Amino acid sequence: MIPRPASVLLAEGTFVLRPDTVLDAPGSLATEAHLLRATLGPPTGCFLPPTAAGPAGLSADERAPGGAIVLRLDEAMPPEAYRVSVTAESVTVTGGGRAGVHYGLQTLRQSLPPAALRRAATGAGPWTVPVGEIADAPRFRWRGCLLDVARHFMPVAGVLRLIDLLALHKLNVLHLHLTDDQGWRLEIPGYPRLTEVGAWRPRSMRGSRVHGEFDERPHGGFYTADDVREIVAYAAARHVTVVPEIDLPGHVQAVLAAYPRLGNGSGEPSVMEAWGVSTHTLSVSDEALEFCRTVLHTVCDLFPSPVVGIGGDECDRTEWRTSPAAIALGVDDVQAWYVARLAGFLAERGRRPFGWDEILEGGAPADVLIAAWRGPESAVRAANAGHDVVSCPDMHVYLDYRQSDDPGEPVPVGSRLTVSDVYAFDPVPAGVADPARIIGAQANIWTEHMPDARAVDYMAFPRLCAFAEVVWSSGARDPVDFEHRLNSHYARLDALGVEYRRPSGPRPWQSRPAARGNPLTHGQRRALIAEMLAR
Image (cartoon, rainbow, N blue to C red):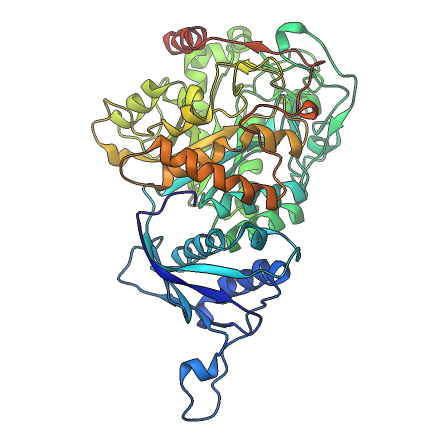
């Protein structure tokens, strides 16, 4: 199974799930019990009725002749730890907290035949689980995946489906990149033009930006407040925290297309159609700050996450160099000035700011959580400066990067990043003085070249499976063993309807020959990162 558990002890025999198998769970685990019934019942015909007390004097076996699945909490265990104990008569899933029970149930689901992961019945079983005991706990507390819905919008149903896939692989953070130059994806009271104007562009770039080619097809979409509430509740039931990100004070061309007055007086831009980074930024003004405060307070109203992303990356200084207000403040100090105020707005709501590693430039408040993306060096710098860090270096976990040298890869950009490369990633780089500062890692799905869920499937899987094991499993890694387990795991992905990349390469319909890429060597990409760090 994936990720690999810490301890697996198998014995002879199997537990057989039957239509008369019962489920014994306390009221504190009602959500976990409900989801187990909802996922296992339709494909297996085993809907797990609750345990009946039965007449006095009956044994447990007599009360449940079809066996039982038992859910229990054990406060002596860490909250995310679990134990699955299987005999011929019962399966007992014990967790240190509700999350631990949830992860144990994902292990149980993977222990069944792959058809048990389908949404409806395709056969009659048998639905067997090997006898034995599995004990497990995660390595990191932040096991995340970023989904960029700004470059290409993903409807709610697609987001919910991705949450299911994250949960099965024991990932617990969905970082939603909600805004960028190419689109704004969230309703904000008082600023209706953000979605009337900022959520739409007349066309999108086709392929790498170096070619300057467009598809001439309008694109857009946004989430209402109720959409967000649905996503957040759905994720919470699966022990996934949705961390929202509003990218500020750069990456705001979609904002300025809706409200040019928030900018630096450089005309009235339209929503950006090309990939890349706009030179437009928010102005140094009370009005722009009030906009930021309103947006972040609305985000806090909708998302209960204790962490809120504020972006802070790739802020072009061009417009600030001609702005009297920015010049008076100090052009190179504007970004840090903004970060401090954005952090203050979140502090008003008891939330912690989360930003890209560029916000270290000029200093960042001590409680800011850093997403270290510009190589392992940025994680070392942030951690040794006293910040907690989510490690996400682009050459190791950016899932928009090409998966091989195969010319059929869809829109091959970036340096090559194979499943094996992801599996070899260590979130704690050499040079970190206090490894506890690295609270976890995340894989980032940037969607410039992923126009729909099918494309996301291809680019994310199976690399996200490898990443899930990196952030969950402790101990030495065995690439040969992982490849063996992954080959078995493909049947589960098939049952779930995931259009993953096959080991043999892309299928004909997964290629995009009309969308030309721009593949880089590892040396070329390292040189670009070094150039960014030197600025």
